[in-house]
Length: 395
Picture 1 (cartoon, helix red, strand yellow):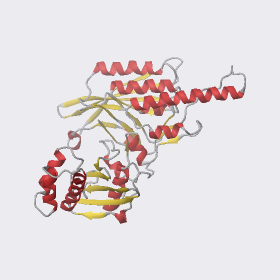
Picture 2: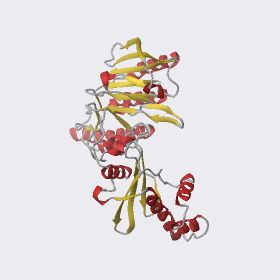
Picture 3: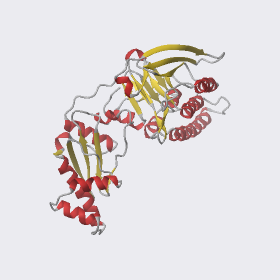
């Protein structure tokens, strides 16, 4: 996956050499593709990146203007050419598409998004640019190859605008009256919304934020602004400064995001634990549910022995984590929050933190059914998104 930097709109490929070796960017080619009758412009900038004996190509496709029928065909020609040329860094996206468009034809936006996913192309909206309507739909196709298959690779630079809205059918000029035209428009609008949701799921995106946009009037744009929205759509922010918060506030934000904002967490209600205390607390949760299930032998017996003051908490914790239980890697600090829920035993969350490295943390939810993994996770490239409040505006 690519590492994006805000300075001068440049891109650089990620890799361990980037921290230690000076590299040279040489512009090899600038190709403008603009067909007659098409307002969209594709500017392809290819750079040769060298670092010692290694060298590879990095492609950026600058896509601007309204989406019109046939534009996806032009993009496909470009992508096929780039793929045939080869020379890109192994494991990286074929190219990055920098988008700047107010939208246009919805179907063309979906076609472009599918092409981006098919060819493994990442997306970005730069500061001062905007990607709205069908452009935002295409943006969701941003993808890079991953060890287990295609992975989301979408970036929004602070100051850029990404906006969704409800799509609508044009007024039916052949309708007998305004009411008939409006009714037909509503029916077609619902069908269009279903098509959009199907596409969103195909792109591997949580449809909830898109659905929120689709139920609003077509003239109202829903911009992606909060940390929770970035996480839901798998978008990494570029040039975002980390919040200046205490460890307890950081833990509260992590837990709030892990529960998709459904667990209100207040820093002053968090209890701090040592790593060993935190492990014993989580092992106690496992033991409680084992007893509820009337399991008394094997691991259940070992749990009871450890919790009665015996040694071996660290070893048992590691063994259960290796077996697949949702036990987080224990960091230097641990914070636990528990909220009573009417009719349910309780709901809680534990966050484990590394004070000197904000991006290193672990989190687990404590539910009436037992320990559970977070309901959502930030993109692997930007775990720092969880350090912001779920509803905090970051762009």
